[in-house]
Length: 325
Image (cartoon, rainbow, N blue to C red):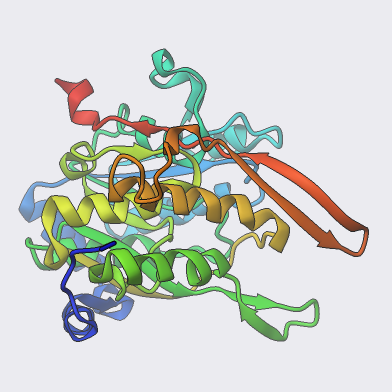
């Protein structure tokens, strides 16, 4: 059975990589970016999906405000909170962000289902021509995250989608770098893209939460809920605008929360479902993907071997433009 009709060779992905990989240093002049943004008559919304991030979200909002004092790049900062019990919403509000509860946005669709749903619902309140999504658990946030993501689109009007690329060092308690923390990216997303969507194999962090695009593009594609959102979005954007309209920017090193290995299986399962759903109605596996809500597996640990079943619900939200209409 033929599982893919794509003909892209590694050399073609390599050519894209050389042409569409930018460095944050290219966009370090925030004033020049602000002048270009004003010249183009564009506005920018930054969306921060938030879940139990009281220790980091305030500093991120402050960092955006400090950037704006030097160069007016961000027109709206919107935090979409997942009912955090640690006071994330209050912290974000105190630091000057607009704060929304994800379940209160588009309530007709029921309670939000994870990060992807929060990102989709945020389009209902995003006023900018451009929308940048940033993770809200970054501990080393600075202007590069905004300037770097925005720069390629302002520099080249043919660029319609930008992904952040960075290293994520996993450190031991004494500070020694042991490995990279992007395990689902390396062991699930990249092999899947290499097999089924080789055009995308030049992206260093295909699952990164740092994304920028015109709101009109984001509104034209469906969003998967939960952790399936980034992988599915990559494929849908590829189909919507083509590879050459996509870019990535190197942002250096990013530090955020580290999840234990046993917590990553359900995340990888969601990514797999998002990709398989884009191969056809049955995901090329002969089963109805809508019925696969349970990730059953055995775990071997120092406490012994256990059989567990994690609920992994992946729902596809319609293109937001259909709601706008």
